[in-house]
Length: 96
Image (cartoon, rainbow, N blue to C red; front, side, top):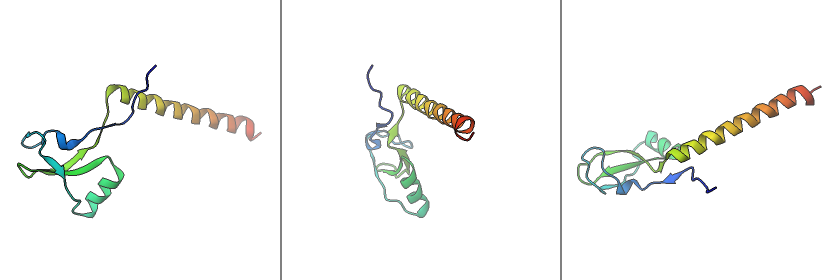
């Protein structure tokens, strides 16, 4: 069985502008305020600007495919199932 990449990097600079639909006109923009800095630090969103129309906003640098989303769901369910079993055994056998 082959490996499935969970996170796939996507370069937003090569995608279309959401406002004017021109191709490959986006470039990185500096964060202007504290809110944009916080969003940039804790998410996969980065600030971009369009060279053609001047649109400015957030674009994601990470994309999910159907296979990667399925892998994330499987990993999260395994973590939750393992945590539930660990809690069950600790409460019923270790504390007696």
